[in-house]
Length: 68
Image 1 (cartoon, rainbow, N blue to C red):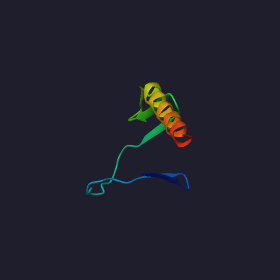
Image 2: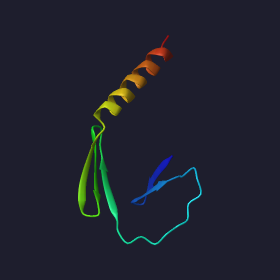
Image 3: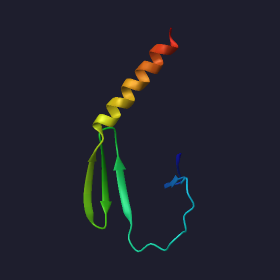
Image 4: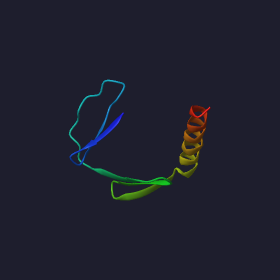
């Protein structure tokens, strides 16, 4: 589960982690068809268009099954 509040993204982990002091930061921009990350001053792009298509099809099937 993710929660965005006050300009912060909080991600719950399913395992115990130890907080560490970080020396580098990452930033992410995610929309419907791609996710772009800036990690250690390197831009990385992930194509998630197929994943979004699967999500849309699933939501349409759920909506259609509710109307039956």
